[in-house]
Amino acid sequence: MPRGHNNYILVVFDSCRYDSFSRARPNVIRKLGKVEQRWSYATWTAPSHYNLLMGLMPHKNPRHVYASDYYQTDFLRFNERLGSTGLEFRSFIPRLSLPVLLQQLGYRTHAMVSLPVLNPATPINTGFDTFELMPKHNDMRAMLRRMSFDEHQPCFYLLNVGETHYPYALPGEPEEKWPKISGVHGVFKHLDELVVGGKIRAKKSRMFSESKLAELQDRQVEAVRYLDRVVEELFDLVPDDTYVTITSDHGELFGEDGYFGHGPVHHDKVMEVPFVEGKLR
Ligand SMILES: [Zn+2]
View 1: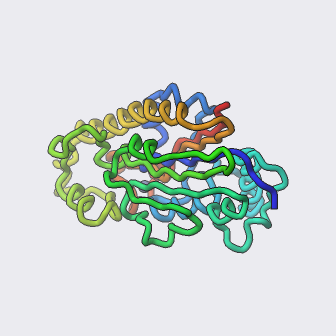
View 2 (view 1 turned 60 degrees about the vertical axis):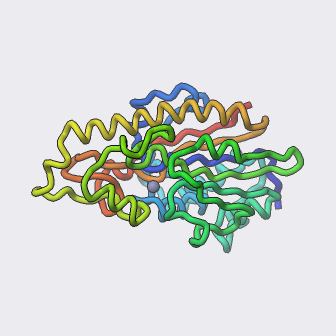
């Protein structure tokens, strides 16, 4: 089994739509490489993270190729991410789990998640040495304080970041200032974001005025600008030979065609995600 030597960090800005990310023009994150528009395999958090942890990044929506060929080619990108050679798709079989594979390659594997739907009691917690649901749903900086690196053993971190998730709140913002949309807020509190979105019913449309929806996307853009500064701290923290991927698990609807949020939403905008990756130094 080939051994990797890069640390690998997979950062997922939860719910961050591609155009929110590009509007924010994050200067630090762009140091990783070209920001691509890609497409998620799923419309909400749990299946999308399951997919990411199968080693499948958001896809390029390629034409004229077989899915199996695309999967295998995409998987070989891990040779660059991990700084290894000779990693083959068959080394992934039968578990089809990125964290399990990384453990076999000699990695320590860690997850820090913001959304309770990914909590450590769920099956997503497979192949991790540590797995933590963060005390707050929106504090990436608190994750950085928990990270450590070992010069003798490479490590993998999955960071599920919640600032970009509804209600797009930065950690310093008091809860009473969060935008309140009747129904949606309650769902968030009680179902742990399981069902944030859906079609806005006509009789309730006054709750989703266009200006309110524009303001909500502005808040997501602002969250990306804030996270760009936190990512700068991440870049300062990590050792040489660290490869970082920053992407999102799915997009978000801000009123387009009558939809809000993500989850039970079938719409292009819920699939569009940013994707950027590279090695720092
Ligand atoms: Zn999500």
